[in-house]
Image (cartoon, rainbow, N blue to C red):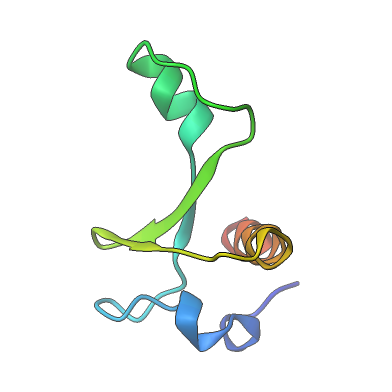
Length: 70
């Protein structure tokens, strides 16, 4: 089980102090009638989005945040 202390500091929202959330952009785009690459996601909280250039690091953080929020 992932604890809040396991989440890197850069993935903790600077406004509310909680771990950021993973947003499934595929589902969001589909609702709006758009198409994006399957598996597209965003890491965000309090109107702030996190940008990670390293795909492996982004997917690792995604899995960590999903495990924390579940």
